[in-house]
Figure 1 (spheres, rainbow, N blue to C red):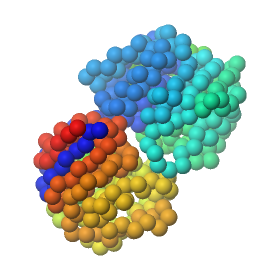
Figure 2: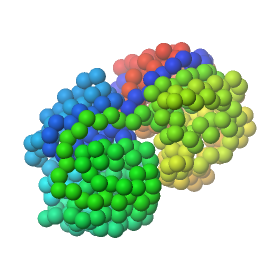
Figure 3: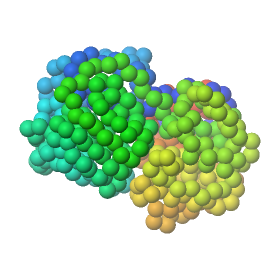
Length: 416
């Protein structure tokens, strides 16, 4: 297993070009199944998860090339509507194939998902959405087996604004007969990106960016040339990296409007922020201030940046509290941060952080993508050497992570 060896103590300064958004790219890549032909998808980050998606599409029958962050996908002969366990167990987003396969073929066999091992993340909303559209859904040998003669539009209210279930229902509904209305839909920019892609292929979706999406079913879709939005989670991670090391950073190819609550929180901890079109500059001159924060669904502070924020607040002046209202069990990074000298106590889904002046290097282990990033940030500010193990998690979500950090002045290297 590969690991990062990190020498802490350097402030991060310089410029980073933000990659395409992983959480936007995965559903868009899978949605190409709905429109037979050759698609060109640009600004696709070269990650473990996007490469897994390429394999998944190839298993289904697509012909795929992936070079220079451009994925060309020929979905003309996708004739195997199956997502096997070996792939789905490594990447939860593989479950996105359920909607497109049902929409195009009326049948889908999809293994129950895996991915990061934290929190209760059931797929019941996905399945209820497919059933509402008329599909028959069964569980057989660890697989979801769904069939339908013809999907039919419906009105469906989600009990929780799930990003994954919203995306899955969108993809299923675009070829359904009649009108579908999704209420309490996720409003994340990644869903808006999927809506833009589907509409460019010929779908008729209105309500983008709101909690109510209306889909007028169409008979067919066509392939397109499409570009993925910038990754707001990668952008937020690098902004927090500069703040925790009291550095100065400029992000390029970024969408500031997607980071409103993140920038607000960083200003509260003492960062100076300047915004230009597709560019954010952050400067942190002093030790961070303590704050209270809540991770929420968009447009709130993202749960995918909650671990990085806790790492930052572990070296803040005073006491802080961070609550996660999206995933109650997303705190596996806390015991690892404590190994580096952080003082954090858990109270249900709230982390109570007593800021310390200095963390100390040590061995830690990544439990998931964002927790891994948080541990790297903590190691960059810790005194001495840290070894961050199981970094394959980080490779699922960050392109050229150590190269970017090295270019900013961090001392980090990859080792077997």
